Image 1 (cartoon, rainbow, N blue to C red):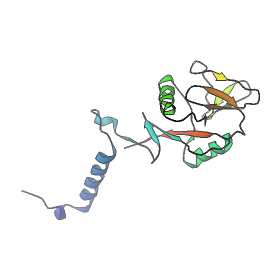
Image 2 (cartoon, one colour):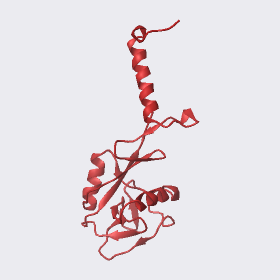
Image 3 (cartoon, rainbow, N blue to C red):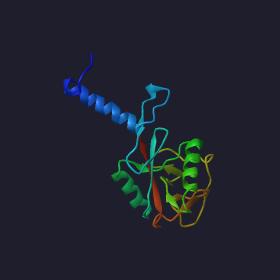
Length: 160
């Protein structure tokens, strides 16, 4: 017995259309329970995080405001694997400097999410006037927050 598409109730057709969309958007792994993670257009997906690398330059505070307007915040680096992904991504770009979400907090450095900086991940090259941290593909710099650089945002990917 064959079923004509016109015989399928609208809700089932909508569900079928959604499943087809997911198949087109997602690379389904062997573990179907893992679901699929999606990022907005022009964002990079890595794990369950989305990363945005700007093409324009702004001061640190303006960069953070821009990230917040996009539902994210400046980049926070949590572990070596994430740091290596970011460095690989930057190695494909031409020597640009990017703001990240690290700033001084009285007795040390703190990420914009409130966590303390872990110096075992990377060392910051200090400069006397620097109160914010920027990075290139190889180094992290203490920079003047009023300098204009590109910026990196991070946000959780949408899981479907």
